[in-house]
Image 1 (cartoon, helix red, strand yellow):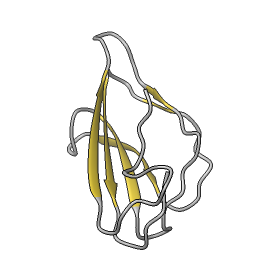
Image 2 (cartoon, rainbow, N blue to C red):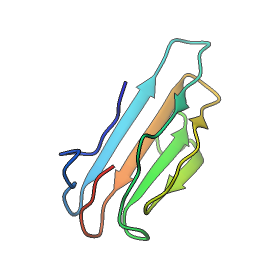
Image 3 (tube, one colour):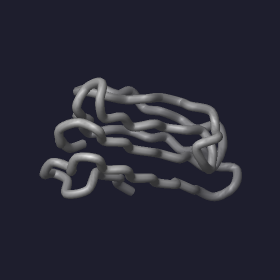
Length: 91
């Protein structure tokens, strides 16, 4: 299902911190795709990790207005952390 920033499609707020844990059945993997991605470049970041929490291997760190290729996990769990420090936008 979809994952969106708070208030999407309106802008997210300053100093937002959000976390999502995506889990699918054992033996499956996760393929994360983006319809759009737009944050304040260099200030607001989406971390995508290959496991259940922040200690997992980093698959990608996204910032700015990017065209993002699909990101695939190696297991059935993926962790996303969004940190907004700058002006608000939406993804």
